[in-house]
Every structure is written in C-alpha cells, then in structure tokens.
Length: 405
Length: 167
Image 1 (cartoon, rainbow over the protein chains, first blue to last red):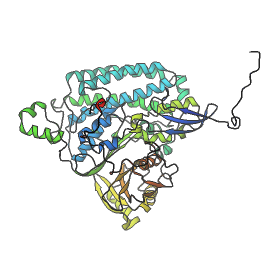
Image 2: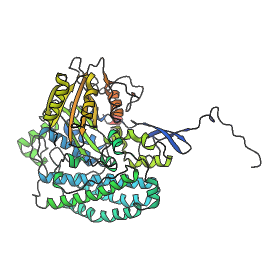
Image 3: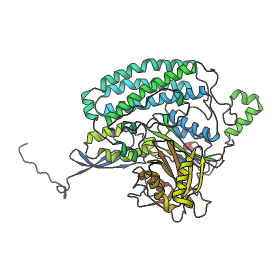
Image 4: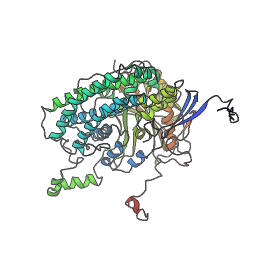
C-alpha cells in the first residue's frame, strides 16, 4: 500500500452528484417482482420511479372467455397471501348479480375463512417488516401459524396457497369436524404467538426507530392516492368495507376498526397487529354463532348455479341436467352491471362486472388495491434513506400478483 | 343527513341539465353517462359540493363496446363519499377513432396509473396526463389488447404442435 493509487473517474461523474440505483426486479429485499429506479444522493433517496407489469398475466382478458365458475382460480392469483378473500369476493359478486341469498351458516363459514386469510396476510406483512429491519425471529414465530391456517384451508378445500375455495352459492363441501378442531387449535394457540411477537417488536427500540416516521403520509394525501385497507386506516381514516358496506353478514359481528394517526410504517404495523386481534375475535364469534345453526347447510339452494352432488348426477335426471348446464357454461346469467367490493388483506378489492347475459362476463375489472396505492411510493420515500425505502416497500404490503394482474 | 341517490340525481340535473343521460340506479348505485367534454366538470362539482363530497376515486377503467358507432370506448369512473358511504358510477363515451378524454390526475393522484392502464389496454388518450405510457404491457406493443377485436385463441385449434404443454 505504499504507492498512491490513482482513481480515474468517468467523464462527468464529478458534476453528477447523484447515483442511479436499480432496485429490483429480483432483489432479495423487495419480496416480489418490484423494480424501482432510485436516484440517490449518498444514501438519501432523491426520487424513485416504479416499473410494474413483470408478471402481468392478462386475467381480465382471460376472464372474458371463461364461464363464471372458472374465474375463481384467476382471483386466487391476485393477492396470493390471502386468496380465500379474493375467491369469496368473486362469489359474492356473482351472487349479487344473480340475486342469490346465502344461508347464515354459509356466511359465517365464509367469515371464518376470510378472517383466517386476513390473519395470514397481515402476519406475513408484519413479519417481513421485522425481517427488513433486522428482526428475523418474529417472522419465524408467526410463520409457523400460517402453516396451521393453511392446514385449515387444506381440510376445507384441499389446497393451500391458491385455494379456489368455495363455489357460487356456498362451499363445495361441508366443513369436517377436523376442520373445526383445527380452527379451535388455531384460536387457542395463535394469541400466544401474537403476544410473543408483539412483546418482541412493538416496544423494541430498534424496531420503533427504524419504522417510526418512515414512509409517513397524511390522511388527505392517502385518500387522494386511493389508499384503502390498513394503509389508509394507519393514516387515520376509519374506512373498512366490512363496516361501510357489510357483506356476508359482517353486520352480525362486534368488532372495532383500529386506526393510526401518522400513516407511517410503525402505525401500519400497529394497525395490522390490532386487526389480527379483531379477526381472532370475529372467528371466535362466528364459531359461537355456528353452534345454533343446522349443521348440514353449506350452500344456498340454487340448483341452477350450484353444482349438484356427484352421486345425484348419476341417479337423478334434474341433477344431471344442471350439472351439464353449469359445466358447459349454459347457466342463465342475468345481464347487469355492478361493482362489488370486499375488504381484502391490503385494501378494498373491487370487482367491476358487466354481464351481457352470455356465458362469460362482457367485461370484468379487478380493482386491485395495491396497484392503486403503489403509485404513492415515490412520494413516501422521497428524502428517506435507502434502508427506509426498503422497509417502506415491505410495510405497504405490496403483492406482485395483485399489482400486475 | 343521509345522502340518497334521488338527491344526488336532483343536484346533478339542476347543475348539468340535459347533458347527463341514462341516469339510473342498479344494485343501489346511481350511474349515468356524461359527455366527454364535461367529465372533469362533473367530477369537480361532485368533489367540491359541500353536500355531495365525492372525494375518493375508487376505480377508473375502460370498456369497449364495438357495436356503438362513435361511442365505442367508455371510460368508467367509480366515485365514493367517505362520510355518507355512497358510491356513484359514471361513464364517458368516446369514439375509438378519436379517444380523447381529459385526465383526472389534477383532481386525484390515484388516477395516474389507472389512466395509464386504461391507455395501455384500450388506447384511451387522456389529454393532459403527465406520463401517458404503457404500464403493464411492454413498451413495444403496437395495439390495445383488451379491445374486442382481439379474441382469445381458439381452444379447440389443432394446428398447433405443442406437445410439451399438453395440447
């Protein structure tokens, strides 16, 4: 090291004070296919430009040819961290179009599944915020319980991640006693893990300092940017589709909407945690309400839209006819135009459906919450440190599948 | 006070008169069609009015109706009032040959990407948009894939030798 080394700077590099950093699309810290071209000055982010569309799969176009019951698997692949909510949202939209009234028991079973999905969605998001701020432990504590929730899905519908759960009019089969046992197990064990997680994170000085004040947004800006879900509630707006426009009998349940005040990463974390407690309480209430209802009801009585039992198809003429009509996409669908929304894991998941009476929708548009609020990302990270930009990205709960449709 | 669809309808008719057509209520949501030149005026009125306060753009998308001559493309806005929890939908029809619609980005930041998406898939030209380029499709694409003249591939075709993928 005796000789002085000469560094030859490229032409113009002294004048240009900022660096362009290509963050993503396959960066380990982005948790999905997100690309951001950051203009950084030292470690400070001056501007960000997001590129989306890497995993666009043209779901809206594909949906224009599929019969209604075949669109459910497409919705799985939007927000794949909470696909049951998407499935239910689609069933509810079609049921609204057709005017199908589902029995209370179906509604409550759906609420259980949707709230489980909300918990799995939030636990991943909060766990990942922890991972990005250096606390891997919390993520591992919670991740075990996602496995329990997935076992419940498996018991109900047979699959785990892309669930395709439920049918138009109800569920494909009744919940087994094992499913209820597993839900009870989840209800008994998850609070302990969540308490442990909160003890680990919520008052942890490193975590608070890494997240508090990072990626903050005011309520006005958040509304202007089209924020919904926990991100909007963290900014202090108490908008929740479950309360504003109750679906699937959410009006029967007693729960509160947690709200934050500053709209920063820490408030988003707190809101998600509080929502998990609320979801647990809703599942508990639903389990109690189920006790007074007939145990063999798991779908509405709509033979023209709900697939009959396979045994009946072989033995009964009517069941055979309906089976054929439904599978061939010959069910009578009413023409109509509606927008129906459910509270997804990360915001208001809307289905704008135009039916012309044909076998497939004339047009189906998904209102994907994170596609809309991701536009605020450059504003959220402007002036922040690079490491804060990473935390901000994960605390927004962006899901690439939903972003790109 | 609760905001009813009849009241919104009355206020809109007072303000815009005959310009708004097809005022109807379906599934509890008021919907109407507005002329393309008035889309911003309608939104601004709904936004500013002290009683209406439609200050949230829930959704913006486009629909292609190839059979409606000179009104083939529709831009659909879903607005929302947080206070009264009321939703409203309106459409703006433009001919596919001259699909110019004023951008809503001045009023709602959220319109930015949604308009880009509508441009990307339907070719609606949002006049005044700060960054109107493709968003989900590749930049090199020369057509607008969600239009009805592009049908999906026929599933029963047999000329395609695609054994690898099970066809």
